[in-house]
Image (cartoon, rainbow, N blue to C red; front, side, top):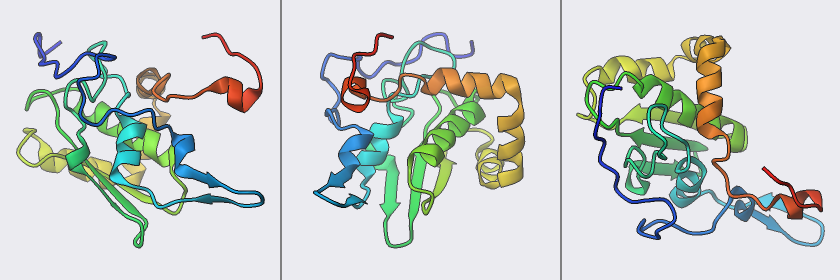
Length: 177
């Protein structure tokens, strides 16, 4: 563990996040009698999708560590593009690529396929910023990383239970975790 005392910007559940709401991915859907359409996606929607991803080193979320912030997310619905800047907790963070891959994986498999997802390190926040940004843009390198079982397991651990879902609504039954 490189950063033995990360700054925790708020504790989960204390309501101190300015962005907190009960929005889930389901809230992005507009349902009428015969149509299911996806409304325009906003930076808040993206933030809600990624904020509960767990940090690979700490039992904290990316939001709690200010690794992801609403102000660092942009969405262009006309160009079908989402850009997320993330800020590692220290400039030499060895887990930065895993964090970037986790955000990319979660958004790629959550958003409609028409969206291009671009993940970048916040400028000036990471020693190997250009190399990491290049890695996140390279589809072959991303695919190779996701085929590595250790990396895939780490990503899965980070995104599991990172959504607010009422499974009883979807399944018609109560699900116990």
